[in-house]
Amino acid sequence: MPESVAFDPTSGNFYFGSMRKGKVIRCTAAGSCATFLTGLGVVLGMKVQGGGLWLLSNSEQESALIDVDIAGGHQVRKYAVSGAGHRFNDLAIAADGRIYLTDTPARAVWHLTDSAASLVKLPGVFEAANGIALSPDSRLLYVSTYPDGLDVVDLKTGATRALGRPAGLCLASIDGLYFHRGALIAIQNGFMTPRVIRLMLTRDLRAIERFQVLERRHPLFDGITGGVISGGEFFYMANIQDEKKTGFDPITILKLRL
Image (cartoon, rainbow, N blue to C red; front, side, top):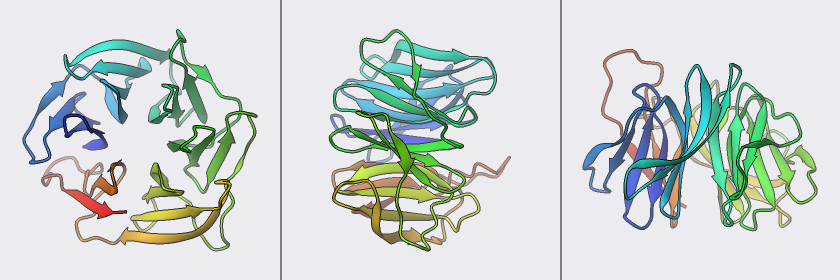
């Protein structure tokens, strides 16, 4: 049940986080895989930044943002929030190292700067906060409010508002969310017909101008949640099978040219 995937452009390796076994698997592009890290909780969002793999791990005791050294495969830093009512879901990393992450049951977004000793909660309420992405200049933060919509946060002014959209466009159940060349790539699941869509933004990046369905009703779909962009290609898992107890099929990775 790998809910998340990250890509290291230096080595060309992919990393998959397990929701059920508390570990991270490292795979080459050819499909050779091995255990990379164990001893974790429910692993959700992951991103590679520089020489580190940042991941979100959740247990009954805490939700944590963890910095892992890729070369050594060991934990470098950990930033945790204790107590019930938290589940760190996904994260976005700015070019200057700032990290933003969603906390779904807390309806919150947390923020970490490179010099900070702990996480700080952003103002505002983000209903069932899930997918998250940054504009290229790291000024605008996009947050999936999973029930139905996307919020855009101006990180300079602190203002938050709903991302404008064309009439009739459903933004419910957005899980994975990624910025690419003036557009947001989004994975929709839940009660939606599972699909991958491209949301082309206006010039000011504060509203959706039009949209395009990139993939839907693929015969292999059996739970789609997260992916990763490498160059002009989007890699995502077709079948994490998160509702199964037994009888798992091999995980299939699909690739879309953007």
